[in-house]
Length: 466
Image 1 (cartoon, one colour):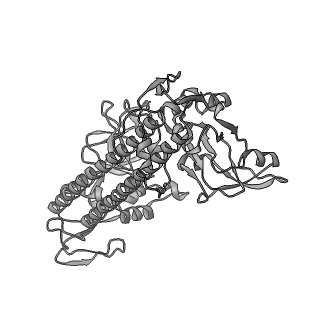
Image 2 (cartoon, rainbow, N blue to C red):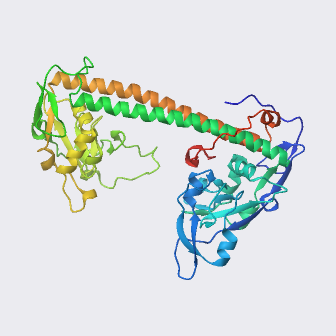
Image 3 (cartoon, rainbow, N blue to C red):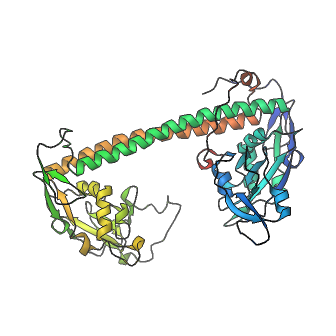
């Protein structure tokens, strides 16, 4: 994305293990020597007698690289002293100070242009660079570099929630190039960041398109809008009698689920694997060792058996698509319903049908409960639901076509997500190399167009230094 860059001519030890060697003419300073720091204590409460303000909060900084007028700031109140101390000014750099995840500490954002009543909110630290030592855009990029960000991570204290002390923030080591060089580095990175963001947005649009294409094909196939063998509509249609489906192929039937499936309500064997229903991937074998949420099954005797090819669904989440086909014999939670397909029924076809929005809406209508979002689809209600049923050979053909289209589309999406990941990694590495002086960007920066790239909102969970 950018031209080839080379190293500086001469280097010296920085004195910091984090930074390593730096260009010979650079300085290395602690944060306290190049910026003033204030840690905000202004919360979201509104109190009588205080001045009405708006707050820039943790999420605003976490999700945006630049803090400007487009953000919907939270209304609050503050004392006159708080207004004086924490009022934001152009050029300030804000960082996240506390988080449940230590890798989310120290995420920076620059203040570009904010209304006059916006203050730095709670859980944030406000850095105001000394103009004779540090430029705010360079400070932003330096704080994004792994060599600097990691200093925050190791200094964070806590067990379930992590935070930085004042001294921990002030004590981190920063590379300090000459101001002209800081400007060149920041400008070069701003331009590169704009290019990366445009590239990522283009890939994300393609992903959205392919996801919708996948859903559209599946819906058309399982509801009979197209014949997957010809990729054209069927020769003749008839009214299904149900508004959610509309017309269906003339030779299809509407059959209640009780004639398609029988409930399997068997006690499973303890040696069988545990199966779970995922909203994203259907029924799968639960991975206890590889999962971050390691669990211990206290009593497998309470679990039900699902045979390979059975349809299993979560009673409380069927309306959201928590349904799938068992890939192997296994044990499922008592909160699941297991439906055994009758002879001539291809459960793969019905799995795809059950994941369409139209069918999930019908599931919601048949579900029961006191509170809507806790409704359950019991077997007695599921078996009453009318469902379109093609002949057995068509069920298999439709399932195979949808599976094939899904596999092809999913491979394209994985490839694009990989490209997005590589673009983020490229940006992260470039930031680290430039702000620590591993690459010399001075000459390249002079060739940049005078018209700056527009910076888009950056989600640090995708592109920030881990």
